[in-house]
Image (cartoon, rainbow, N blue to C red; front, side, top):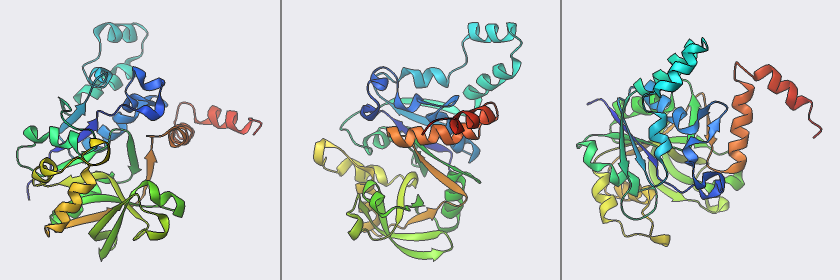
Length: 292
């Protein structure tokens, strides 16, 4: 089976839940201590063997391109003058992680549109999709776990996460599944944001995808729904109806960080701050001293 080399990262949304912060700054560039959210996503893809990172952007997203570009010569000069060679190496590494390709989103809104916008650079291959404003921290990386499932069973693969609180089921696409082995399930149907009492399981299938090129024709034919939006989960459901095998890989040794809303973003910053080697002790001391 041909190696999966390309990952599409949609990053064209307006980030309305973080306004006014995102009026001029991409939500994908919100910092988690000292790295933007999207860098965690890119690092996961690269650690899983991805060579080409295709970032689908929109207006006011230039900061993303600048971040993954070769560092400014004046910045390098300033750091070297201050004897900060480790920082020079760290920021230089960012642009060398992968081949970066940038595409402007075209067409209707919705999370299916940026995927369709990347069709011309996929070249009829299987490819990965990872959202630019959330990530799963796992060992081994989420995408590498999904790739192993794809290598064994073929077909499409979606990352799966168990939702602990019943009331949170309405926030995700919840899958009706048939067990295959251990953490692998065949997806029979995906119910998008179900009533918690009617959810088919507690397994949310979202965040990471390995998809076949056949998904593009389905996205192209999809009639825009509410808000004139084109949805990737709807297209995947259509793919399942054709009899194409789609699997859920329940991610092992991992934790999902939804940095697309204020509360979950703040939880992520605090948790990763407590595990950051430069500030963990003092930050923990600060939190313990708060009068809560």
